[in-house]
Image 1 (cartoon, rainbow, N blue to C red):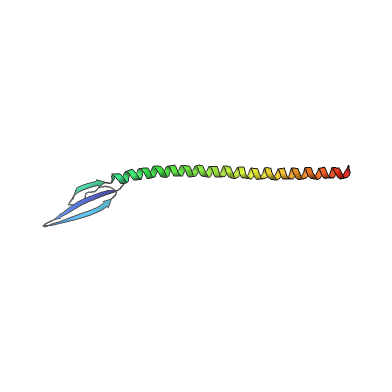
Image 2: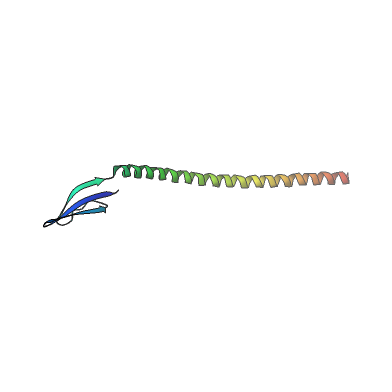
Length: 102
């Protein structure tokens, strides 16, 4: 959260405004707080941003899980294709061999 503190320091016959941005309001020695401003629009945007970042992180994690599942499925598909090709090749080989001997 951002806080804006506008304070004034009194020096005899002089008025010096001091503008400080701090994380929380403080009162300095010989000072008093004239105005305390809390940026509500920033706070709302920050809360919304944090919620969206949490949702984004969650979706990113889900995407990574799906990628791992898809990668596993792809590897299994390739193994199945290679096994099928080997079985077809073996079947054709034995069929031709049987014809030559028979």
